[in-house]
Figure 1 (cartoon, helix red, strand yellow):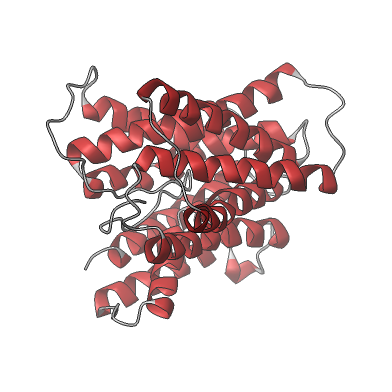
Figure 2 (spheres, rainbow, N blue to C red):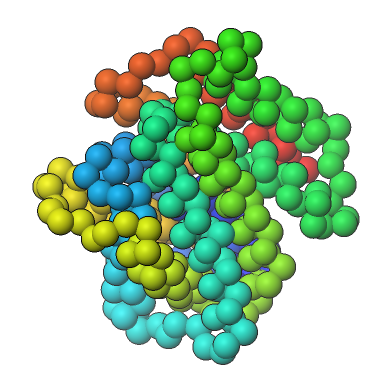
Length: 316
């Protein structure tokens, strides 16, 4: 987020996914990057299960508020431990507020609302459409970003995969159209946020960790204002949903970002971003095996087509 080479954000967390490595020797890692890559894919994949369990007891905006609160706590703790400073300047904080809305508060809330009516498997697959939306937004706002035939083909293939997942030939039967639209809008929100960040927050001179911590902090404030207006505060806190929200925030947002940042620094953004293609697979497996969600043949077939299309749109 702080570098001019920042190119994208992670759909699973709304955190910047590409960042130039900081100068100097890289620290020695306790775990091989492949192990951390696998852990990151698992955490992000299970995030949709955590959302589903959380919304069984709490209103969607309170699930998102808890997610933001616990995720922010993790990042701020690391900021304090590293003795870093949060960004300064009204302009930077203003842009961070917009980024927090489009990359965190809005998409996280939309996914939470969506999963009150659609399976977590479908939400995870809709999340995979983010790179497709990203290409559409990039072409719309970046005049010199001319799509190649291959990328246009990937876009068409990806959205054809979405129609297959939804069973378009049978009138979208079996899927809630409103919930599905909310999940797809969430993935669009990520794309809009990424484009905004690239145009406004590159080269601020602040560290990647400090910028992302400030972004999550602002997103938490936004949800703290919005949640009480949408629904009354929870009257009880069942253990399993509460633990799910805690895991969603602390692991799926806070710790996951730290793992991702380390991967980008060690193996580069291109390799680190490959984790995105494992997330819907894990989300689907978790939903079916743990939550007992039904899976028709068209769901995995369509998801595979979406991932292939998304991969093509990312090739230059």
